[in-house]
Amino acid sequence: MFRTIIFKISFVSIFAAFAPLFLIALPSRRLLRRLLVTLALGVLWFARVIAGIKYKVHNNPYKNHAGDGPRPIVACKHMSVLETAFLMAYVPNVFFILKREITWIPIYGWVAARLGFIPVNRASGATNMQKLTHAAAKNVARGMTLAIFPEGTRKVPGAPIKLKRGLMFIAENLKLPIQPVGTDSGLYWPKHGKMHPGTANFWFEPILPYNATLEDIADAISRHSA
Image (cartoon, rainbow, N blue to C red; front, side, top):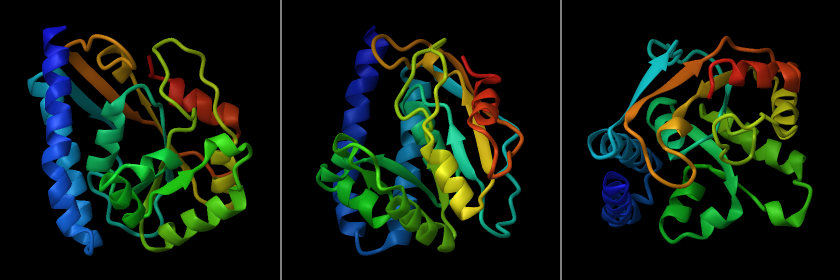
């Protein structure tokens, strides 16, 4: 538990240290992006050095990607903060669909808005998917990559996978294929409680067509996930 406490203190500290840098960089999206990647790599470094959580990537499609044409929507299993940091660090020009409340956080909410992250008001009932898809399409046209946690929230290891239909709506309307990503990060960085040393895995599964079913996507995401 000592490692977990020290890591959480360090986690808060690194965000506090980066806040003034983000504030200065707000006018420049390019500089903001570089700072965001650096922050994400910092979180991954602290997780490894302090909490003993390493990570391994399987079948990384971005390692030698030439950047030709729109990239698939990344649909990732969500079990911890680790995959958020991982996607920010390693998926080129990534943007997320996130809770509207996150954009209210001083400085970091402004950064999210500036980088094209799309807020959703979950408390208002049904999401306006046409509006959301239009915002996503503008980002994709700018060469950005959409990453979605299709379960909508973090899950504990072994929990049955249940995907939201919003992923299918966006994929079908934008005609973008889907890149499923599985992980077992929750075994080491749980939603609540003590962190455990070990090597978390990220599996990039074979790309699915934009008209894949929820069952196809769920099967791919859960193939190697905990």
